[in-house]
Image: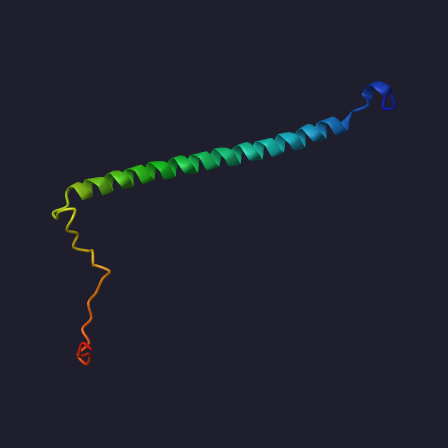
Length: 84
């Protein structure tokens, strides 16, 4: 019957296990998503680096003679300065 002591349900234990399982599940899913994102980023970076190395090996100029490099030192001549 309804009032029997055998039919008592302990709610506290079930609620804590449900809450704990939910938190653990969310944390696990977040960790798995983070690892998957990092793996994809690593694969994209490696592919891009290999493409860069291939383009660098095809370069037509000498490594010591970079056409994009401009020296930081410049010489400016002042026409009004007479050297004194």
